[in-house]
Image (cartoon, rainbow, N blue to C red):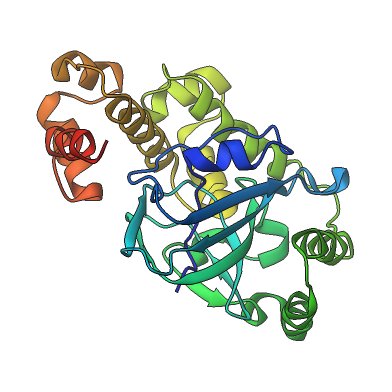
Length: 285
């Protein structure tokens, strides 16, 4: 299953020159250097930009090569994924995603904006957190028809056009909370000084309870989780860079009470300490 295959790789940024989209964050293991591995991303139709971040496609051919694990620390987004002629919806994953790449296969998916899936699920997005469900559980028989149309597609751009058509026909009415949710999540990503929910309330003027309700209903997870997840992404970026780190200073910079708190948070998600991860990463280079 690849219901949670969600992230792009360093190799993807060369392959996806048509997109000008931001590079990967939270990638724990890079794709294999041997064999063929390709990732591309495409923007949605302009009228869908408030709901869909981008479409993505992954393909690999590792026949004759050793299988390779791909691991990521997932983002606060919902995904629609088409693989092996099956269409599924994946909510936010609170745990590390691990996928064994082997043989030859491909995947096509939709990454929704934070808050952007709410009008399509028509209930709290939190109901999908840590779940992967068949698309027809969300879209009914229309989900089955979309699945059949994707099966009939022969090219990647056909899938993009099929998705654009599908979501254009379901374009919801105005909902000011959708862009607000997306904006708040983007601020957390872009403003590293937002280290706590209190920081977010001060910068936005939105009360803690209102933030909790908005994030639960539209994003699918509480704001503290989003803050902590993006700070872990930053830690992964630092570790992947190979730079020498002062753990005490870095813990405070990322909003942790102390070094032990940072190490425990990383270990709970990744399974090993930051130092162990950094050592393993150096050995793989």
